[in-house]
Each structure stands twice: as structure tokens, then as C-alpha cells.
Length: 71
Image (cartoon, rainbow, N blue to C red; front, side, top):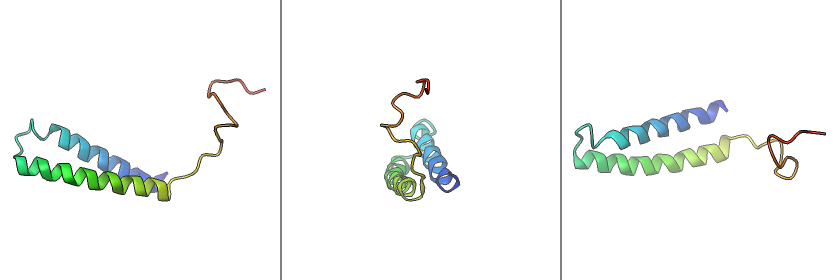
């Protein structure tokens, strides 16, 4: 999970900054630039997760509920 930690944290911080940018006194051009950068970074994050992420070991059919007792 180490390779995908950086994109997730980075995009989350960028989203947090974008959300607070109007209240921090940023100009319209900066807010619009963050808006565009956020969408590009979200696409990058999705590609990295799909490319470098690990497949689940248990399928949906093997385990229906997480709290179900195994017999």
C-alpha cells in the first residue's frame, strides 16, 4: 500500500486547500487554477490506485458479510 499512499494524501490535501481557498482570501484565478489542478490530480490518483493497488484476496461471493461468523 506504500506506493498509493502519496497520491491519496496529496490529493486530499489539495482538496482541503481548494475547499478553504475562498475563505483564505485567494483570488478568482488562483481558485480556478486549483479547481483545474484538482481534477487533473484526481485522474492521476485513480490511475495510480488502479495500476499500483493490490487486488482483494477475498471475493464478494466468498464472504457476503464482514460480521458473519465463519463455520
